[in-house]
View 1 (cartoon, rainbow, N blue to C red):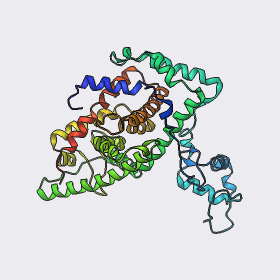
View 2 (cartoon, rainbow, N blue to C red):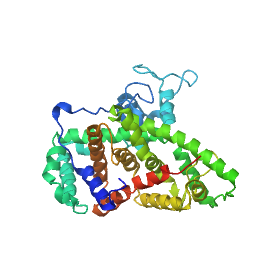
View 3 (cartoon, rainbow, N blue to C red):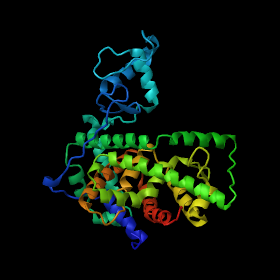
View 4 (cartoon, rainbow, N blue to C red):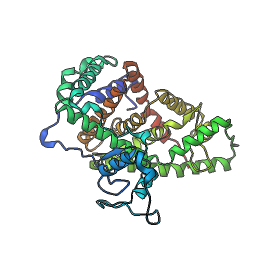
Length: 385
């Protein structure tokens, strides 16, 4: 990738983002969507409802309880077990478990299958998606990709199934990324509170003792980051089929790129509020000690440019999944990686389209994405010990 000029890399990314390769039917592997178990009763989950993974009965219970919960009472010690397929669950304890696990009307649309799945809206939804795809011509590369190819391949199955599959894929990605980033919300809350009360960054003296301490703290953080990212990627639909060698190569090629997406919402007011541990903040000063002044400036400029796009949570999460399949070379199973790239590229483009992202947005966003390989390589070459 180092030898590919930026324009060529831009064209390559754009090509992989929209072109749908024809697949041999005998070799096709269907990607399944496993939402795991219901967070409330441990039954089989059917999707993300009101912000968390639940079964249909618990989803319905929460909806009914929004008005009825003041009437609920527990006849025991307010610690009843909520078991799957148990018909007489304690409503009081079930309601409070819903709240404890994070169900909220504020998240009612997260995980919802769009109304475009309904018959009277499907045609308009697909037509709009097609028109946007036909009109957006990033650089001159779209001239090389006939729109009829995209329409015939991507819109080959029933329109209802297309919307359903893409929605399931984005919901599963959302669920896994939230689990991967558990705890990062508290960093954002801390940052907003500090900024409101008057932010003054800590200035570390660049003594050898401080440098060694900060670097060791960063190494410990990176180990946790590696485990979180591996869990996220390995549980994404389809990624469990990756060869161990390919997984290691792709982890290495995207290690710091995925850290940028994990900390996306922590780049605020010209600084970074990622916490390496309970006390050490990865601000400009600390980043300069770890990365060096030049790479710190390049990295922070890139991250602030990324935050300027104001991505939604699902755009962040699908982008993280998509770039994981985009820039790696010399893999053993390139066919599988291309297949995964197609699925996640479709899902990302579907969400960008629903969010009415225009031509300028896509051009600029793709251009910034193409800088990730270089930034990742610069960070990997640093000796952190």
